[in-house]
Image (tube, rainbow, N blue to C red; front, top):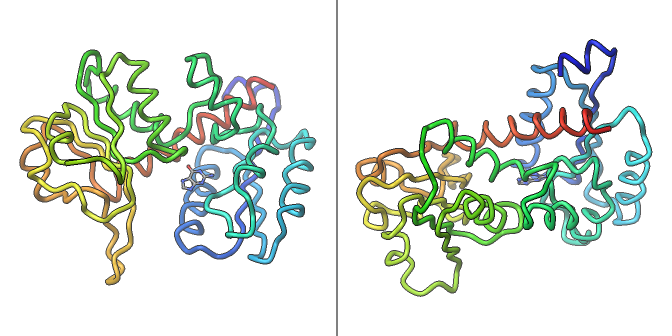
Length: 259
Ligand code: GUN
């Protein structure tokens, strides 16, 4: 980044948000704050709920061709009438700082990538910085989303973990999770991972971010119960969330460097 600055290069991130999903608004604000903090110019495009898929795609195409923009982020979820896949496919592979484009997803599969998806990459960074070796460990990922579960499993596999992906159709989930040396919860169900589902001494990583009716923010893991059994555990908020943003900053700087 200093090298880019020395060359008089400003880094630009375009952040697109459609509609007024309150959680998305908070995420986008946090991303913009992080940009400001490290000296990336962020440009927000806040579009109304009524935006058509064509209008959104036109904006993305315009940003693809804008030399002052290094990274493009379309905050998900999008309103129901817009096909997320179609929009993601429109983002330039070189500006895809979320690593959601199928080309970048494919590159991750074969282990030859420029960008890693921010949340799974943040989880791997937490694991690495905590001195936890994934090699040969039983890794269980609960959740199979394209954004977290699937790429998370792949990144753990790259580090030689023995990886199991669980989902809503998994039979006897607790039997599987109790085998996990490293357990990653990314389902979006408040506090569904309870203490009895965790092995003594496991590493528990909570990707969930759920707002309860009383407005309290909780993860997918029942922290007070799992904390008693885990060797290491991430809190919500303040665990994986800030790492996701840090990885977005990393990807944005990388996009600018690669240009
Ligand atoms: N919605 C939830 N997480 C993410 C993310 O990492 N990137 C984008 N673009 N949208 C999200």
